[in-house]
Length: 274
Image (cartoon, rainbow, N blue to C red; front, side, top):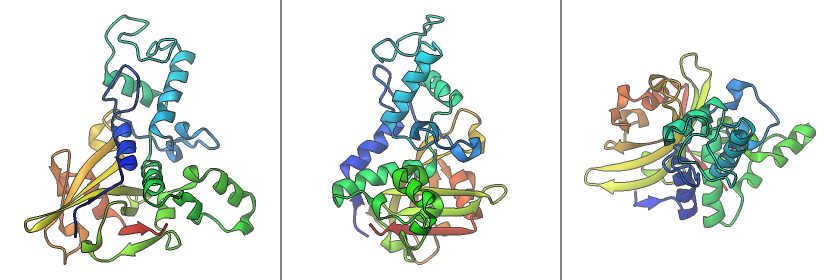
């Protein structure tokens, strides 16, 4: 393995999800929102868990004005205090506002928006135009997928051999690769995807950094959102689950991301073939 990272544009997109670009208020981490659980369709990307950071911010401003929440002034700048109470606003208050109004990002939307920037910079293409969604014979479904590719890019699309290739060796892992987990969760109905951002060889091991959008059960109603973790590969001849997964200071069985990977019926490292 060689030391490698995502493109600068992709890293900027990740940074903006971890620090939503609200003018006047920093360190607002994007919450998690899954549109399939809310049963929403044919909405703006920001309303179905697929928006870019800027789209989420713009929608938050619109909703704040609509409901007179007082988070922003007439110019869209985050206010230092609430209109209703005059008390100081803070990033967590704004996060709760986003969650209450179903504004956030889900796992495949997050990965797709980041990878879109990565491939635009490194290969000068929109990788979504090369993705297989459905056959043209499906008519209207094919057209909708082409018109709304981000909204139609799911974990199963990334697991499709027509869109990605499976990596069988841990030594092959690189930035922009994804780890997919199919049929995981308490009822084996959840699919999840995480994105590899950085690979750093060290003495006797390799540290793989990942990012994703997730909701841990232990974090309750307001703790979820985009998150970063590492997988320390110290035995590359063994499976992915036999490495050390660390996130939020929690390791392996204490780490809910690892537990989802462990429970998944399909756990694979895959690479977009764009």
